[in-house]
Image 1 (spheres, rainbow, N blue to C red):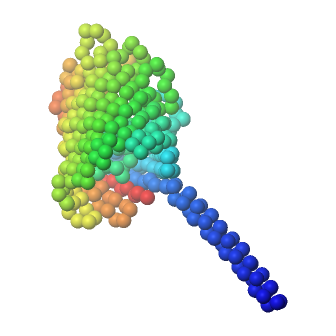
Image 2 (cartoon, one colour):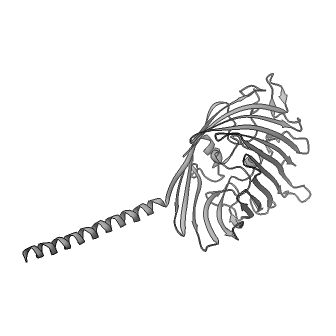
Image 3 (cartoon, rainbow, N blue to C red):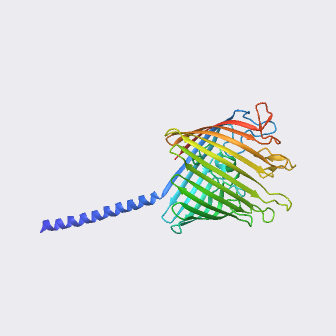
Amino acid sequence: MKAKTITNVIKKVSLVALALVTMTLSAQDEEKKWFDNFSLSGSVDGYFRTNLSGPDKTDDNGNFLAPGTSFANQNGFSLGMVNTVLAYEGEKVGFVADLVYGPRGTDAVFNATTASSSIVNQLYVYWKATESMTLTFGNFNTFLGYEVISPTGNFNYSTSYMFSYGPFSHTGLKADFAIDDNWSAMVSIMNPTDFVDNNPFDTYVLGAQLGYSADSGSAYLNFRYGNEGLPGEVDPTFQVDLTTGWDVSDSFYLGVNTTYLSTGAQEDDADASGFYGFALYPQIKTSESFTIGLRGEYFNQYNFGLTSFDGAGDVDFTPTAINEEGDGSVFAATLTGSYEIGSLTFKPELRFDTMSEDVIPVFIDNDFESSDNLFSFVLGAVYSF
């Protein structure tokens, strides 16, 4: 009788212990699944840059000796940025907090209102409202163009003219629609470009996108329309952009980007101004660790579309040489190699920029004479995690 009682007690204790272990393991599993919804990623980059056809310092007039594009435009050994992306992806809702530190990040997140977003590249929440529709609210990188802010998302280390003068980011509300397995669409309403913290104007910009994706590549047709300034002072800006890229074979890839932007004139009898461009991105993979690629870009501004003036009416900055009508174009060829060592990628590149008009000096040569072209070398190093 005593032995039977002891046996029953042991059984009960064992069952209780088993239940506790099961509950603990279940709790651990739930905790693990909860943490699995979080992700941390990003990159660290820097570069070395030198001019081969001109000096590595400015002349007495302060002429810049780098292509008029973003980010990789400093000489010598230079810093890129630290990019840290914290994301949570739930079953229906989630968020992305994308922070940047360093010169590249500062240039990328410039905003026209305050300095409070000096490290915020993206900051948004989203809701998967249905199986086919996702709503995103906050600050997100632009949907236009081929290139992006993060160096891990671009093949070339330096950036194109079209990327540099298109919008970087938007703040607003967008709705993404999955039409079927291949087709997608997006509509959005956003603040004027560069006003990422708030909107001091009673104007908004509309965006739209139609996309097609398959295993071998994708194509996106993008639109942007709206008043980018004070109501009544500037007519609306319209931009249409096509971005596409396809794996032609196992070792050959071809990307294409073309864009057109027009802003209405302030005076009734004046012409519109803006820019347009076209770029090809062929790439050949020669081994598991090395790929070589070319970016060939033609870019044109018209009617002083990207030209700023000082108080005396003289040209303060223009990314291309221009004639008296404010028209000017540039052709830029960038040959880039990409060598991967684990998570570290080295990107040596040769870049040649040549202007169509030499009315306003844009580059200078080694004799400090005005020149319509510049030949430069960049070595970028990017670590991704």
